Length: 331
Image 1 (cartoon, rainbow, N blue to C red):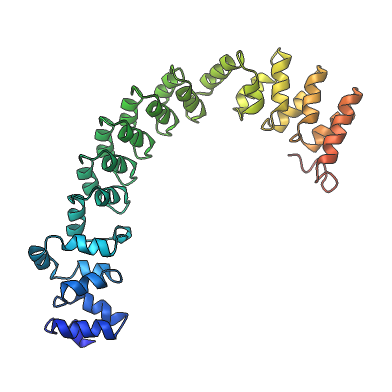
Image 2: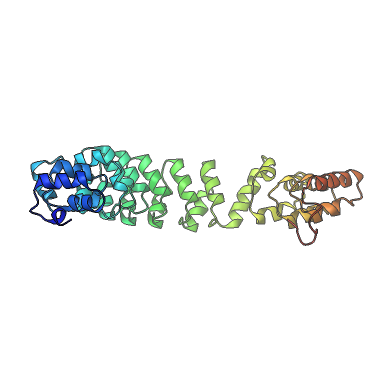
């Protein structure tokens, strides 16, 4: 043990110790400044921090500038480690190997100062990895929001750390994919969402409509416009409850039927539709497998025999029908 620590222990003795013992002794050998470079490379897999913090490292690098690269090749997963020495990270940031720079750029353990440097990298992939990294600070993301590469700007638009100022810039991007990401971002200001929900591109408008920060009256206005062309939107998609509340009272019977068919329609609205004057609306509620037992039980007593039969059949198909009380378990 003492020999493994002693800086005067010869390289050959340290090699023997590393070959003979395991665990603690090998770990101490990895920290010993007399340990030969080839043995440090071997120990790098087990004890990367001890090797990188070995006081002889800088001297080895003077003799062999590729030593860090040799270490990396023997342990390519090294950048998954926490608290790596700045000297090693700085080497990686300036390394000619793009793959290494990409690894550093995507690693959330990388310090923001190194990410800021990589944000200026000549490689689009490296810059996009920086833009995706949640450790990247807002100032760096702000600069990347003006990057010439669509791939980089798209990554900025998706990063949760992106500032409102950067999102404001990206909201007017010529690329609709980027505007759609801004439309879906939780930090996008309301006034920007008001513009994006009226965007010329449908994907952008859809992203804004799904954003919880978009004023509901604007979402409803968009949906009202859409159903004029395609009523099935109400039947097939999960829509805001405020819009459905408007739809259940619509004078167009087809719209009320579509709401009654939607498996996502809230139970209170299905119960309201179960009392609709139109037979086709009540029939749709009776067929809806998501209608509550209370609603179906009511329809099973409907004045229309067909609706009674359909509601009774839907109840029969419900596996929980015989086991729960209707009033206490209204889904």
